[in-house]
Structure formats: structure tokens, C-alpha cells
Length: 335
Image (cartoon, rainbow, N blue to C red; front, side, top):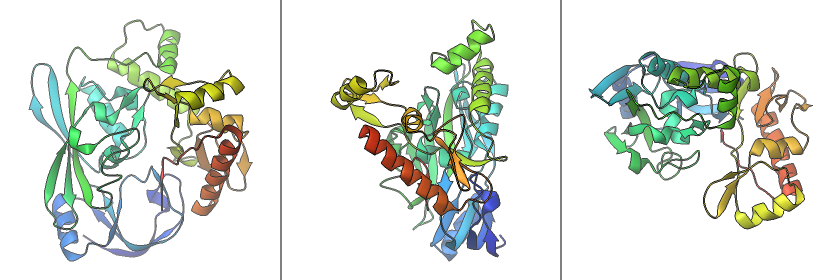
């Protein structure tokens, strides 16, 4: 366990923001993490760096969680439970599931980041969320170094939310995530508009989980920039959920507004549509901007600082509120 000093974090965040860490260490095992916590508790935990906007240098020891491993721990006729280490790349894990014909995560193909940070945000895409397949989360308590298992219900999963983002924020470090996946009779979610269109275009009537994954990958590659080419963190804002009353008012003024029913009293409105209607899609301001194919994605054109991207996000939030009376929240963690 080698601690390095004054290290640039540019390679470790998908926005490609060049800030410095006072100290940096790569954590490759649970034992190493426990030893580190015995030595010091004031650490900054870094995962895949995909849901993060760094606006300042980190004046702490950055512990980069790189613990690897995928293990089948239970296997029966219909299901399999798989334990995945926090440092595994999310998309590579999805591809592993596809190769083994384990169903449940295929709609979340090509989401950037690592497995360990996925439960914090309750990541999701195309009608599926992590909570749908998460069996349990194993985490180490910072204060004691003890390992605790959180079953699905204890994680308090919500839309881009969990107990790890709220009540237990900063108190636990996730080391493993357990998934319950199907081995046969896969419950395919192909009704989401873009997936259905993609499958129809390919002439696929009875899709497999690989077909769903391939469709999602194709859609995402067309719409979203590759972080290795153009720095970004995927969707920067959450889709706002508003009351039926607020939606009725909005629809009177904008009859074409897309929407999704959340409950009998709430409607979800795509944040990307709101941002696009405000003229930000494809607009560049200095070194940053909103992507030409997806208004929700804020990008770094090469030399943007975290503060520049933050200022753009605030301008977008204000403009959306002024035009629609709707507040859109950042999905990324801003440091």
C-alpha cells in the first residue's frame, strides 16, 4: 500500500478535471482498506469517478477503491446470486452477465463507473434500476472497521437515491454488491420507447438479454459522448417529479411536453427536454457546454475547470426554473 503525494486526479474522474490530491493510495484488497482505516479515518473515498464533479483540490488522503472479483455464491435452477467487488467496472460486469446468460442488468449496459458506487446512486437506465436486482450490499463502517451487510430493503433505494447517499453518507465504504439474477425465463424490459424502436429496426421480435444489451449500447453510443474522448459524467441532472396539478399547468402552456406517470399524484418530466427547450442543447460556453445529442450531458471540451462546469449547471437550473417554474437537481456529486 504505497501512498503518493500531490497526485493529479485527472485520470480518475470521467469529467477529466485536473485537481490535485494531497495524498493518493490505490486500495486493492479489503484487508488493505481495513489497515488504512486503523491508521486514519479522514479519507476521501474514490470509486470510478463517473458521478463526480471536482471543483477544488482534495486536501485529504484519496483512497481509490480498486478491489476486484466476481464470485457466484448461490446457484439454483432459476436464479444465481453473484458477489461483485466494488472496484469492478460496471459495464464489464454487465457483459460478464450477458456472456453467462444471467438476466436483470442488461438495460443498464454502458453506464460508466464502478460497481461499488452503483448502489449509492441507485443507478438506472431504460426502465430498470439497480434496486431491481440488488440482493444485498456489504460495506465497512469507517469508525469501527467492521463489515455490515445491508439487505435490499435496508438500503432505502429511491430514484437516484439510497441510504448511503443520505443517513449513512460518509459512514460506510461499500466493498461488495450482491445481485440476484435470472438464469431462465428472463423478465425482459423492452417496452421502453428507444429500445423497442431499436429492436424493430433490427427486425428482432423475440429479444434475448444480449439483444437488449446490444440495443442499449447502440442507443447510448449514438446519444452520449465517450468520456475517454469528451469529458462528462453522463446525465448531470435528475428528471424532476412534479405534482399532477403542476403538470396540468405545464401541459396547458406546453402541450407537447413528454412525461411519465410515477404515481396517482406525480408525473416525471424529462430534464433533458426542459434543458433543450431553454436553448442549451449543443451550446458551448468557454471550455464547457451541453452536448449536441443529449442536453442533459454537460461536457468538458478539454480545459474546463470544475467551477466552470458548476457555473454552467447553475445557469441551466436558473433558466429552467425561470421558464417552467421547475427546479432540476444535480445528479452528480459536487465536491
